[in-house]
Image 1 (cartoon, rainbow, N blue to C red):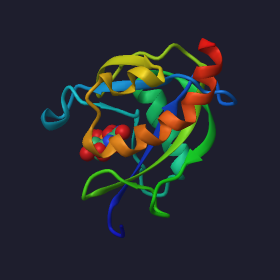
Image 2 (cartoon, rainbow, N blue to C red; image 1 turned 45 degrees about the horizontal axis):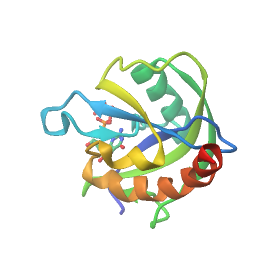
Image 3 (cartoon, rainbow, N blue to C red; image 1 turned 90 degrees about the vertical axis):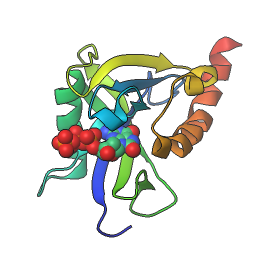
Image 4 (cartoon, rainbow, N blue to C red; image 1 turned 135 degrees about the vertical axis):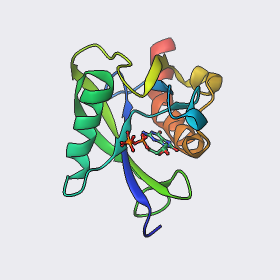
Length: 146
Ligand SMILES: Nc1nc2c([nH]c(=O)n2[C@H]2C[C@H](O)[C@@H](COP(=O)(O)OP(=O)(O)OP(=O)(O)O)O2)c(=O)[nH]1
């Protein structure tokens, strides 16, 4: 896990206390990622705190401000091994300002409820994270549909 580049990303949800839907973003670049869905975010700049990098990326990519909730921790203390060169940390987040628009890096956004989570082709490394998030979203989703 050492020597991997740190990527920070957000599981943007409708509500931090009772999350039931998740915002997914479709990559528009680079070529090998085009059409795959992911969590908005990106690489942390040198000297930047991970959470600060995440707020910056979300402003740049979607034009939104967020409140961060708890971190969705992975199997490794460093985060989720999303590729053989990147490790990712991700936090729940709620939009506090702005309507999300795919400004750069993405060309589509979708709010997904648990039954729809796998209707989109996620990047391979994100699949175990989406499975974990399904468990996070299910209680509030099931309470809502009842
Ligand atoms: N942002 C993000 N990247 C992901 C996810 N899953 C996944 O495998 N990746 C990969 C894709 C890229 O190879 C890498 C992140 O790079 P990036 O292109 O988003 O980062 P960045 O905006 O800072 O990129 P750069 O163009 O400035 O280098 O991690 C995900 O859910 N979100």
